[in-house]
Length: 113
Ligand SMILES: [Zn+2]
Ligand SMILES: [Zn+2]
View 1: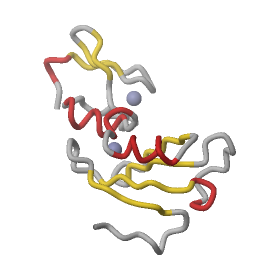
View 2 (view 1 turned 135 degrees about the horizontal axis):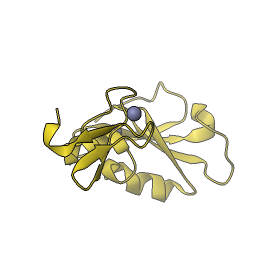
View 3 (view 1 turned 90 degrees about the horizontal axis):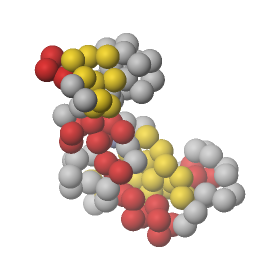
């Protein structure tokens, strides 16, 4: 069991089986992540500092097991997508090349790192 009870807003943490990354569930406002009253619960990829907000604790808990659905870095790790050399964004496969969604840099899919 991972215990981060010293962290504000922390509720639970888990290791996602598919990616091996640590995922935390937080009360967003208490944790200082955000204070969107319509989405007070946060699922956080601790490895990549990716945050996704939810309306209910149940949704936040549900997403903890599946970071590939919302953390683009976890998805890239599982898919084997290259990261953009300029900004570190996971690149999207477009036909026979990879395209960075951030700066639109292109890499031929044959020449991935
Ligand atoms: Zn991640
Ligand atoms: Zn880029």
